[in-house]
Image (tube, one colour):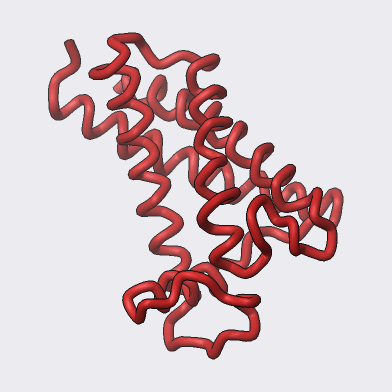
Length: 164
């Protein structure tokens, strides 16, 4: 059984490293293919409007900006990344009683794409699975690839933290 301190360390390291890997991947994808990286300012705007009772925008870019939205977006991005680290490791260790592996990291990453498909993309005004986007096939595909890569990086972070 894993100690509480080890669990926390592994979950935080995994979440942060996987989020950094995702950020680097998005920059590489943008440089090679022109697919834009996530706009964390718009994501921050979306999060800033949630306490005001507004979850869905048509589209978010047409909603009034809020002070500090880029910082809000980046902070939420990394907090969610760490939360995914806890969810992944908690699921493996406590619920399934299995070690973290590359395969279950990939599966976790693929399963986690339901959040952007069914919550974030509609909230940003591009509909479920990006169906209202100019290229409706792109948002769900990019989200799936990003989340699968993120899941692999979660496993890598857990493995790396376990070596300490």
